[in-house]
Each structure stands twice: as C-alpha cells, then as structure tokens.
Amino acid sequence: MDKFYESNKIMLFFMKKKLILYFKKLSLRSEKRGIFDKPK
Image 1 (cartoon, rainbow, N blue to C red):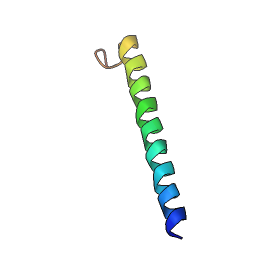
Image 2 (image 1 turned 135 degrees about the vertical axis):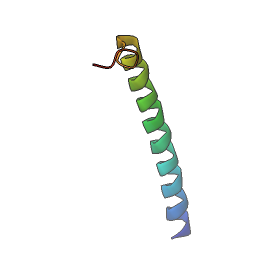
Image 3 (image 1 turned 90 degrees about the vertical axis):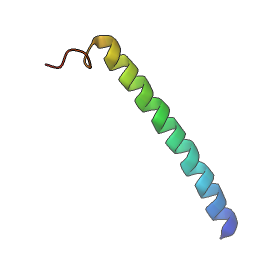
Image 4 (image 1 turned 180 degrees about the vertical axis):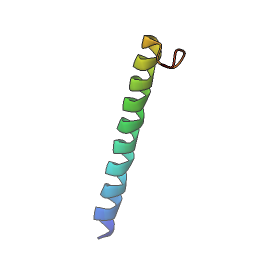
C-alpha cells in the first residue's frame, strides 16, 4: 500500500508539472495574439 501511494504521488506531481507547463504555453500564445492587452 505504501509503495503504491508513493508512486501515485510521483504521478500526480508530474501531471501537475505538465498541466502548469501547458497553461503557461497557452497564456503565452494568447498574449502574442494580444488578447490580454486588448480585451474585446
């Protein structure tokens, strides 16, 4: 049970990292389009 929990924590950690990177990419892309400086 403990081993399973540890590997689960590691998986969650990597998933969070991937999500954060993904959202950073998205916000960078939308900034380039000018969504943040020109709200419609």
